[in-house]
Image (cartoon, rainbow, N blue to C red; front, side, top):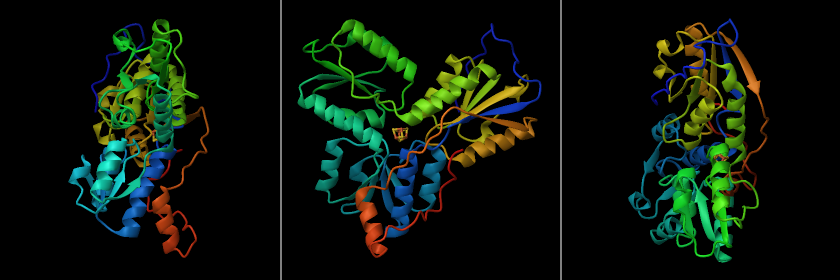
Length: 350
Ligand code: SF4
């Protein structure tokens, strides 16, 4: 749980409707990349049996990691912790070529659950590096996705964490610079970073399309819509989940007087809502819907028993399982692709 940001003195303590209600953002929760990655671990456990090793957290959510651990997944932080020849799943955040090479050298049987939208950014990095660009990766140093993308061309890619780092950027040729980004950033802050980069490098090239993914943009869009109407915003998501942390920041920037991020309903404190009539609620892209339902129930116990869904986008994207896992499942089913047979870690979102 994060510390809350203090309410702004200019904003009244309560606003919105007189009845105590929850504004539930939609879309929220699981995105297609997370759904696929969690499904990959579940299907691997069901098909090959435990243990299945997973490099890093498959997605950044405590509940998901704990639930999969109970079913036989073993989470490791380095490929070298996986026993020689064992089966390992790479997380949705992606890995660098060096990690693939290390896994191959140790004869690991890999299932690559990298989100296809992250793979797309890797491919851009490879292409721009081949064309000899200096590549500015807008993202957070140390985040697994950034490490994986940077690993595609470490000699060409430099990471810029935000507007404050733009002045420190140095390039070989100011006419041959391109920017790409982590998929889970704040849209507005990224665009500000790019604006400042362009001031310094007027020939800055853009990637073919925005790298910030549809799920990040949609969840931030829903939060921006409801934030001005709420007294308190609650974001369900883990502290190491980039997109969840961004949702809290976006809520505050969009006018929520105060915002909290929690992993579980039990972290909610009644004092946070003592003066509130309207509570906004959303969840990060790695958060199962069951955790949101528990927050709704807990808020209901505090008198917020009316729920209004505020939908700002509809999502229909889904990704198929990693190729080699799909092939094994199909072979086991006599050439047919078996139906969706997972006992989900949690239900799908809205
Ligand atoms: Fe893929 Fe976006 Fe989900 Fe990340 S947040 S796993 S990039 S869909």
